[in-house]
Amino acid sequence: MSFFEELHVGDVVMTGRQTFAPDSIKSFARRFDPQRFHMDEDEAARSHFGALCASGWHTAAAWMRLMVDYRRAEEEAMRARGEPIAAIGPALGLRNLKWLRPVYAGDTIDYKTEITELRVSGSRPRFGLMTTLTTGINQDGAPVISFESTTFVERRPLPATES
Image (cartoon, rainbow, N blue to C red; front, side, top):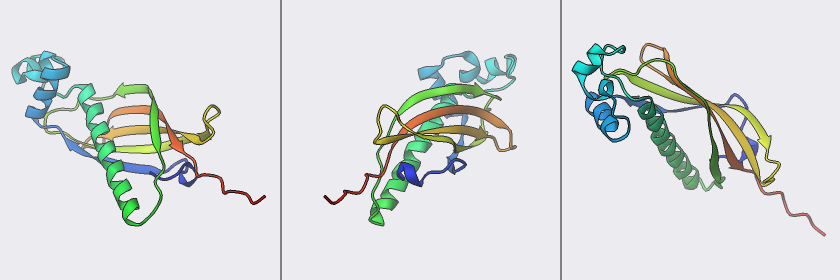
């Protein structure tokens, strides 16, 4: 992760892409959101969704996995170049989580995260607070999920002053 000082409002990260296969939708739903329209095609066809669709929690969890993988790859590349890596976290939670459209079996979602605000932490001056807006867009260009989050990001150490 880059240090707080290298980040800018408007920076965008394309976190990754996830295709929601029927078996994956059903498996996630059996464990975490066992509603019939997430687990059975016939039941889903009779529901207000009209077809098998992923749990909203599944779409959020898929983003989290992609974000962790993205950050790990970024850190490995930075290490390979000999660059210092800033500490990140914890996140302070999610706000305005919206499931805007169903994610149906076979849909592919592209996730992107944009920095919307940066400010120095008042309680932890060694850190800044980065607020982001994350969106997931399906293969037809329609938004399916969005949420905001705020996370601590390490600031660059101040240079030592000579006495």
